[in-house]
Length: 279
Image (cartoon, rainbow, N blue to C red):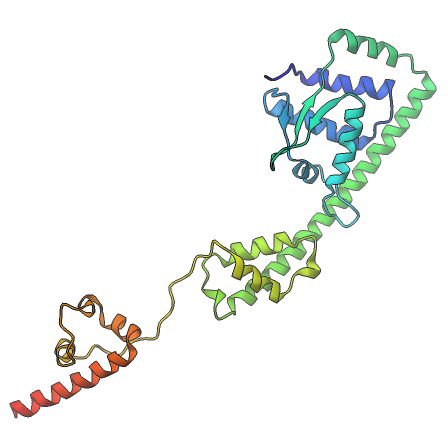
């Protein structure tokens, strides 16, 4: 059963804790706001499940090289839990962790607000300066993240084109219909480790791929069907009710190469005998 949830009360709870306890950072606020947003998007479902790696990706919690760092999300999560803002449980059997936004009643929020008002002007100024610095740093980080994202997209696109060209020139794997999708999966898997992408590993990836869709094999053209094919089959002892009867000449030619050549020769011999008989 979902517990009580109200968006504004949840945010007021954060600020009450921030002013009375301290110890929370701008990233903590970012993570908490996202958890509240998720709960609200689920129509107040509290508790709810959320994949931490996906949350870190959405919030762009990355290192200097632009790689997603779920560990940053985990540290914020622990501080929020310690502050009494959330409760969470580790997911079981591959399921996502479960989160619950801890709600306070109106009286508790009012008391916290009253305590917060006791902060003197000097402290308020310090808090204001700290928030301004945090916002400035956040804007700088966002600009850097966007730049890294654009560079990564351009790099990934270039790498993707190179691998597609290599696969389309391969004698075997060029006949795979969904080769572009498989290359996309390969590039996405090694996006954070470009040094590990090479031709041998890509070919191994294709060999292990289970959902391969093949294009029809291009067979060489068969020679024209012999004029007396059925008669030649009878002369070689193959009854017309044999499996060959239901097969087309190109199928016979490509499946039974030696037999097809003999049929061509017998057909020609029969044609000559018919000509001699008539003359």
